[in-house]
Image (cartoon, rainbow, N blue to C red; front, side, top):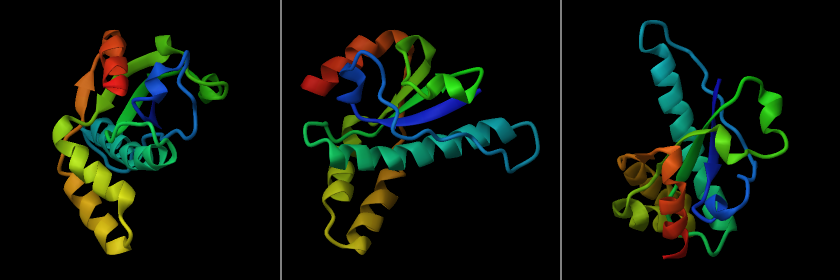
Length: 141
């Protein structure tokens, strides 16, 4: 089962991924693409939760991070996520930085909604688990 964890680039520097929330795909459609649609929606939901993590972590670079984790049972994630369970990392490219910053610093709901709408137009970039060290470098640059 695939689970999507909202995170920050700073979270990726830890010995294991801290678990704050987990988003499970909810299949609400039928057809051959139903699972893919559910994964996309769960990724998007987790990316929005990542904004909260960024706001709570002043040292976090302004890029949404979603960690896709493969588990057999949900209880596997209760004590944190070990890096060997990671199936993929989904991370904002640099073009999303102004929108992440705007969403995290908005002083009105209207400004936040506008920034999030723009941010959702920015596709998350896919990284393989083997690229963790590259992503860790982004956390300190």
